[in-house]
Length: 144
Image (cartoon, rainbow, N blue to C red):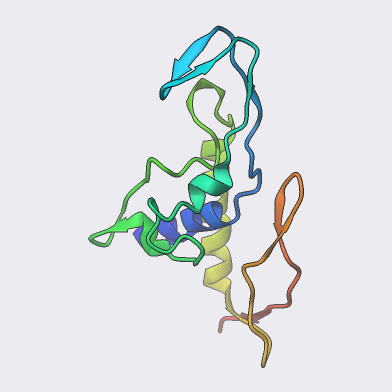
């Protein structure tokens, strides 16, 4: 189960759907990390930069579930924020994590997945307000 959990988290890291998170507005003049943020300043958190930071991730541009494993056990990373952080974090985070885990394990129980012959799968994304994977074909072979 730790590896499966790590795979789900790596999918969320690599498949960062909302690259710039939800905008936030500073409610009072604030000092943060040596910077002055005046009241009403709009802040965007670049989650893509955070989730692809080479100082935080051993192989930032490679799908690598080992990012979330330590001695074979799952380890949550502070630099992993696909659902934001704090009291304004996504209300559906726990439901989304549970559903992804159940959906992923159910598919793996029932199918073996392979790329079509002579095709390589890509981790390239289409960039817009959200990130989405490029279209590709995949073979889902029912397990006996």
